[in-house]
Image (cartoon, rainbow, N blue to C red; front, side, top):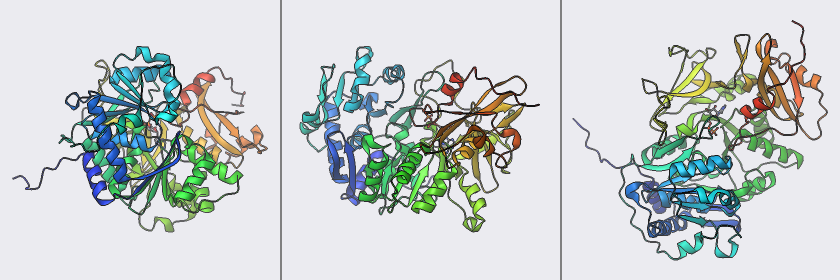
Length: 549
Ligand code: ADP
């Protein structure tokens, strides 16, 4: 017997309708090249999404073929309008990461067969180089008003504000199937070509529901949320959906997402209560606050993920600014949230070092995502907090295949339908998962594994260290040994010996790096993570100092 409940489709359109009715006056504040601080309401934003939908139809885009619409844009209100105007029309918004190599951008636009591109003026020069090779792109729309349209070598540019001005703000959103595609995001492609993850309306809604829960991001109408994760990568962790779903205010920081002073001003003046981002962004913000002797007075909590969160971010945020830090883990293929760190009852009464140890774990399960760890024979391993294995996941917002995947590639899922994340993890009896490494970054020393993440976290806790990376370099006896690369703080007096001595007693003695090099910069991926592969290539011939046997 089937239940007798309505078969309502889970659509992004339903968030738009709900927010329009229930939070029409909630604000979106946005920084763009033509507005130092733009401010409007959900009601105005969605009216413009309807104008956009009319404009897309006028440009000939067709929902029947799920036409792809590319965006090369910052976090701002126009990008937000695109998220809804495109997906709710039955089209697919393809958010393009402008920090990818230009050959990769060219590849993904052609692979996605984007018909129209919506581009921030800052990113036009990227397109100028290979516009002639974009065979499917019929129009390029610049996200600007007429007055601020940039000079460009491209002569067929349309102006976003003119496009909208010519349209009515009434549009009948089509009824869609919840399994229909709504958005597309390519992985960074550290090996091979980037791969497209194609989200559905259903997966997006379920992900937004789950991530808004109290033990996840705890989103509410009283919140003001500033995502410092880009809307061009994994939909800014779903924030443009989950915040309108809960009725909060959104602050979209535009191009200034790595500018400590700009972020501080936005947090204080707009009264931002919650923010999300990769550790590098928050390390940079903390560094600016320290140098300028400023304190955050409004921010309550941040979610830090995408890379391991250093202890310093957790402790300084709490002690100096009263901000609680929630570690989280996920990936493009998971929309992205997999686990998030919120403590269980009485855990915060544990000794401080124990609480910190727990908070440093990536987090515990979010209803909707199943996780497990397995050994090389795919046998499930125990949740005992120290056995580590390959981390596998499944659930309604985990991808089952890549968009137009290579037919010769190995299957995306294993025979039981699990997705192998490529991460190595332990899970404790309370379900708290700890990523010990990316399987390709782990340092294999004499048959044992050394966690590069743990060494980096230990290094970054040194007061004189701004950023650190650890890679394995080849060693005649042990196969690989750790090399530590450090960016010192401007005023730090720190010798190589001091740095290595810092590890004593903090990690097993055989984990202590064999060498340290001070550097002035470290390469990052398009999403702000350390680019370990580039570092390994750079230090491929590095000769470690001779150490006594
Ligand atoms: P990209 O490198 O394209 O940005 P993703 O954002 O999909 O790709 O990266 C996902 C990977 O990032 C995860 O598989 C994991 O290795 C790493 N990662 C994400 N969050 C964390 C975290 N909190 N701690 C350690 N690693 C993390």
